[in-house]
Image 1 (cartoon, rainbow, N blue to C red):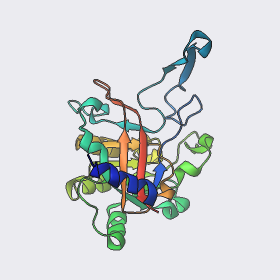
Image 2 (cartoon, rainbow, N blue to C red):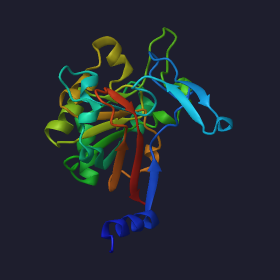
Image 3 (tube, helix red, strand yellow):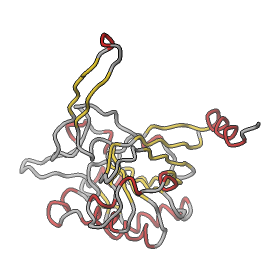
Image 4 (cartoon, helix red, strand yellow):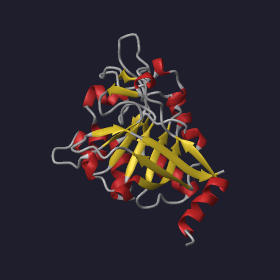
Length: 244
């Protein structure tokens, strides 16, 4: 029996570009500075008949998904996010030029509208990624700590997050940094943009990579994570399929 759907996927394999947006997981993987590095213990080797490792890490480690419950009382857990929500049209808003001039930059509603003027309106149920090129920095410089111990990196404005959900009905956002908010905002006012996206019952993905290899529009993102019961989040494998 002919499998039409698989025939279409086969065409994708030949004609599309497949981009891994995920960091490898290891004790050296970039993560939020408040968490300890992942621990790896080999408990069986091939000399025992099979190879098994024990991994000890937090739920929000490396490239990871945040479910609404991560910040919002009564919010959905990771296992309550439906499979259809994990496959989205991908829109990439490139503001790396602004970030180069201002490492504390917050993506604005005007940035979104400027992107739409060139690429068309963001479709419903989209995953919108903020491309800052921050992931191109060495891992040791992701927090960008100044002489006084203050972090400096870009993020989203609350207004931009609210606009994407309320006016465009997006499913998720993503970024290359370890936080949603610019570090200076998080330090002085709290995690306002992160609360905003999760309060809207949407999810987000942090510490993404390779957004420079994905076009602004026309791609699809697959966000794959274990179905962890009562999970606030987990490391993910994010893959973009897009025109070459």
